[in-house]
Amino acid sequence: MFKLAVLERLLYRSKATNTLGSLHLFNMLSEARAKNARLGITGHLLYTEEVFVQCIEGIPEAVESLWKSLQRDHRHFDLEVLARDRIDTRRFADWSMAFSSYPSLNRFNMPGFFAVEKEGMNAEAERCAQVEA
Ligand SMILES: Cc1cc2nc3c(=O)[nH]c(=O)nc-3n(C[C@H](O)[C@H](O)[C@H](O)COP(=O)(O)O)c2cc1C
Image (tube, rainbow, N blue to C red):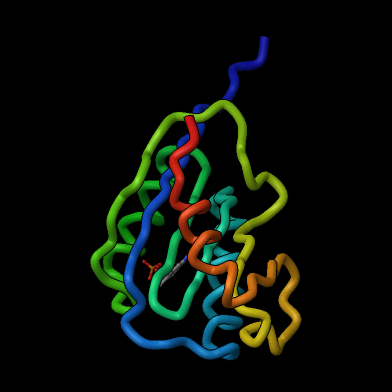
């Protein structure tokens, strides 16, 4: 019998310190994805220009290590944990960090970018922040 790896999902919301442009986001995502791939982290980041909502999932040690880094990062503040749970399966298994934001912030055609129009953003941010059992 194989022992299944214990997995954890951490969902948080934070406030962006500055408004980020396409290039900054592209660089941040590229670095994050490279590190996530090393740590076996998958997830999703939503950016509304004011607020981030991020879901990170992986083995607990990796999630905790990334969480420590995130808490030290001055690009956001007021980090608020919305949920932190053991999980059986990953919700974002295919993404080292999927990213949702306004179409105008995808000047560099990032893979794993999901466009959200301005009118739909508040609802989308609410949806991402919902804690699913
Ligand atoms: C909103 C936001 C989301 C981030 N997401 C990730 C991520 O998914 N993975 C990652 O490695 N770094 C991410 N970062 C960057 C980390 O905060 C940190 O700078 C990076 O992991 C390097 O950390 P270290 O210097 O402790 O190694 C994110 C930063 C911000 C502001």
